Image (tube, rainbow, N blue to C red; front, top):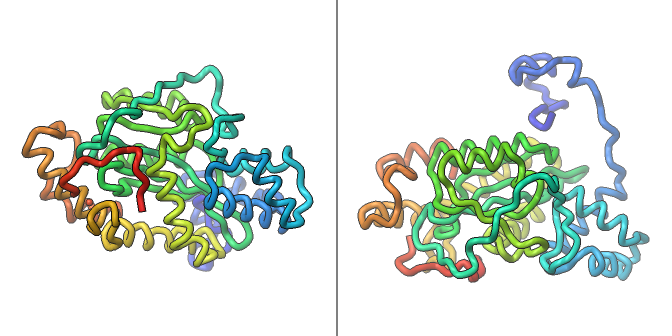
Length: 314
């Protein structure tokens, strides 16, 4: 029920239920709220992991103990699993998948992102609130660093991931789509959407978050420049604030690695060039003349040189 604003003064719960097409009675169940201690520990784990993404549960436990937090490694592992995070170094995969689901090989070890819609990456991260947390999923074009689509939810249910995938594929289509091996990205519902569009699927090696380095760097930027500074109090505030920030990130924030151009400038200028030179598949993405309508609808991108996927983003 992540789309429900329980304390909204504008729409009663009954009206929200009708708009969402769900039963009214289900809205009156109140799950047990997390304790202040649990929230504080998860927020601190998020800060440590964002700063040191190569830290696994062992090092994070050591760091918390140095800060006089009484916690054992098993509890840290449980929190990290609930938060959907795991250290970069090989080790236990905390973003657990269904073993029956298919895993695809990592395709990008020697491949450079050569044009827009060549390689997209998808990932989920933990977004802290003053009294809780949410989850942010985003789809990033690796060539331009352009955020194609994103969504926030209060649970890790797959529906918000699938809705974001559908929205991105309605906008454009990549040649290669990269993710980790988490349960969301090995699920049949997710895989079928990509195969149905003839997209090549790539998955990070187990326990190797650096295989998706561009999206990992996006999370760091979003948190340091927005989430940690704003300390959002409610889901609505987080949606509004992150929507404004990602609009700024796409259309106004210059990137050093893009010769101080914005992702939107790079994405649309280079895509036009790629279509003209035949690098991009006709019909695989947006027409140049659709740019303004596209930016208005999804909030939202051109370097002349090829971008190596092993580089870091700024």
